[in-house]
Image (cartoon, rainbow, N blue to C red):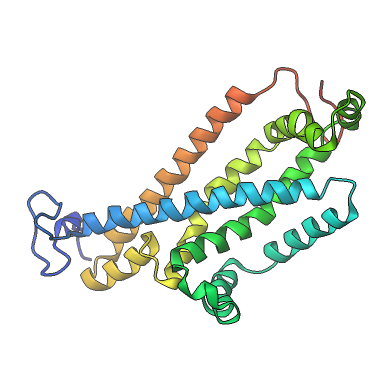
Length: 251
């Protein structure tokens, strides 16, 4: 049984020589440098995709609760389309198929295409959560806003959405953590994120245990950090006495 060798991360990626500081100097790159760079790519893909998912998912969730049948249909089609196609298939569609159909996409970096694929996939799940959050509120809140002279968009902006987002923070926390894990599909289109690093570094060093443990640790740290941030947001935004369940309750 071979022993573990954590010094593998202090080795140069070109000549395999140990570097005293574990960080490359003068243009040299160690496996630790590569690991941290890959972590940065993972966080970049995940954070940008989450922004896309929150914006588009919230909009589609709202569409599914308004009186307009056309907007409801748009929201339903979007949600069912993007949540029922496997994520990896969507990545390949964005990378291989759509640029062939839409020539302008050929100039778009693969990083952006992966962000859109992951963001739209997650937006379908967030749309369902936002819809459920809005529908869980007492219907009297909508009627009260309209009775006060607010337009429907104003009623959503000032009455319904502030309460609905408080209700759906827990499932949004799960989606935020999932998007970190789902970002691993970016390796399929050669984005130099953590999974790509793990596969290549393991092949070059034959130190799969150390490499995959390090990568696993960074995924756990990233997801846990998001969990703590969202827990803080939930605590600060909690409304005392608010109880929402099954479309009833709330004060």
